[in-house]
Image (cartoon, rainbow, N blue to C red; front, side):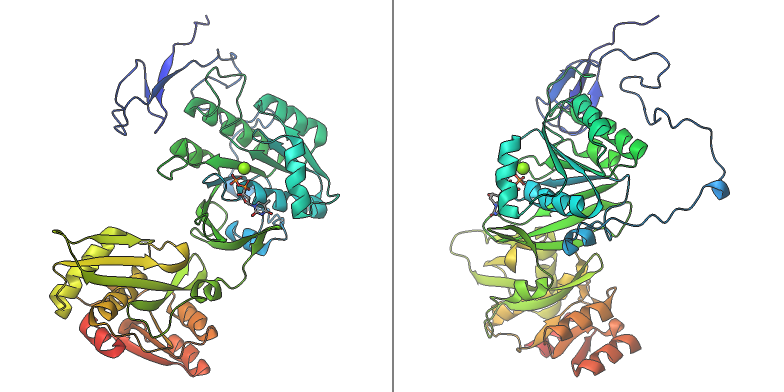
Length: 465
Ligand code: TYD
Ligand code: MG
């Protein structure tokens, strides 16, 4: 009854499938992205229909269970002894979890995972580090710089998924690292490693292994030219946690951010510094981001933002200068350019600043990127300060969302932001009037800091400049 499997064409950008080749993907509009993928015949009755859903674990058979009968297990999280890494994971590694770590080449994915793997091996037992990118010798060289020492760490230079799974049976590791998911291939699939079909197949097999053996697994993922994870949709759905390495190669510091986490808060941050001896956690990143801040310079404002559960102080810089050619340039780094345009319009209409024919540049210092609306007031303050060429009062920090009417709106987690500002020695905080409640007053009183609540951008600029 078995028929030869039909070939399918799969878009390598978004994973969309078609029975014939198409020049342009109807889903994501990418050109020339369809590649033929030929699944190997399904094994009858094994629940492994190629291309279908295969979320049944061999050996884990059993019917549906009543909710009340399911044991609630509070399994302890396994620490990696790297505080910043445990924090992004939501407090350590959850047994049986599948974690994807994405990032640009050379940003430090292998370095971080080798460090974490070595610590883990020392604390909890053997770790299998499978690399399709580097030989055992190369990994060893790196390990020597990182001080891996005699931890029970097993290295395997291998790209075949089935072989890696075999080694799991032999080594019986407590943790598996696969570097990277784009270099491995499954014998069940005939397309090249890195193609959507292979990535999906390999990730699914590692998912089974992770859940079936309660084996926490880290997959390294590469990113495409435009910064998205290769095979993004496919991978993000399969894994429990997606971590993303941010930062510029020209800066020493790196930020690991949780984009999705079934076991913790999203947009949780871990901050690291790349040193000669690997990645070093930075326990107080606000200090790092504010280290080279110019004081008494127009166009600079300090923002109290919150990433995940962590408050952070960052410097927002703005430069407004007369345009020399035709249309004025508007540029934003580390913050959405659309948001900046919106705030410029608010400044013109609601605060009476004239910005026609001015070039506007906004930058978040230190390579950070923000997407919180609470950054609005700080961006406005930096812009207005640059336009008027007057610095903000020293020792002042700002946060608040700004609406199109020029109103300043309250934001969540104000006390957390205030505490961080106080710890870094800021004596005055300009914030939305709506956030002036007892709790924030109390935390400001303790620190001897002044709080200035504002309702409108005009009012805010009067207070700030
Ligand atoms: P790597 O972990 O190989 O990046 P990825 O796996 O994300 O491609 O990191 C490589 C960079 O880090 C490389 O440019 C060298 C640098 N590095 C250090 O500065 N110090 C170190 O101790 C190590 C191991 C690497
Ligand atoms: Mg690497």
